[in-house]
Image (cartoon, rainbow, N blue to C red; front, side):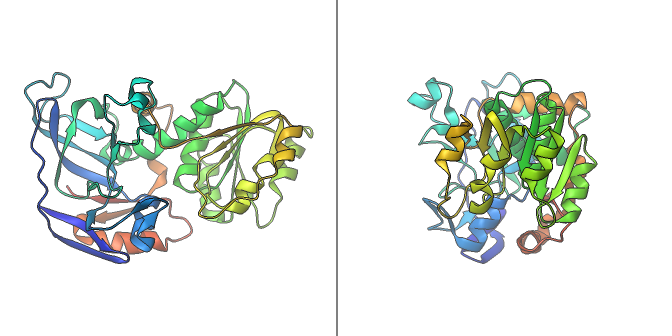
Length: 344
């Protein structure tokens, strides 16, 4: 089949590749319709590695996907050909200790699309377990279906924050993950969300999605803005979604006493973290790695209309233009949030 293959750092090819994927009894074969371009895909393209995950052989990119079921294994009971679906890209070892504890996202043996050496989904068809393939609600399109994966990150972060009705949250970073986290925080009960960035166009888009207050960190100090709006108290929850060491180091500054900081972004350099500043606030620190048990909730929220992710899908490319899509994603226009590639 033809696929978008990362041959090595900064070299992509749209070419034929042989991938042996027999259909097991509990598997479905899905014809891919839409694939989102994630920051991790771009990072592998530009740098060839993320932490310990190093591209050492040609690898198909892509892990945010939706499509249509073409074929089902004999033991599949919940899906049938023609169903529109999205797929959770990480498949854990069902017998691992992490999986048995319900922490399957932390299973060291998880096979995650487009994480070396596992091929991703920027190809016509994939074979995937029924248990990690989810039917789309009738009112959810393929583009939104491909957004469930990054939305799951935001929802997992919101869950780790243990949000309470009326909480005030701050999201550092208005990229795809940050903006989706802001939506997840509102869905989780937050009365107001502040979101920071340096791009006015991204901040303006975020402000149209609900009670979200944009803060341009080139012009305003987030701590001062939040304290002024909360009577000097600060935010109940801070979500760090930039992955920038400088932003991560400042997360505690905007937090109220007894608040929670959730670290989502993965900094590429050590973070100078002020432990004492966190201690004097008795801050609760949470971290996340991907997500677990979130896809059904994400689809329920999308299907109910509680969440609308369509405005975040800003750029569309045909499969034949996949290389151009990645080159664009490396240097997007200020107002761009999510690039998607359409195979159908």
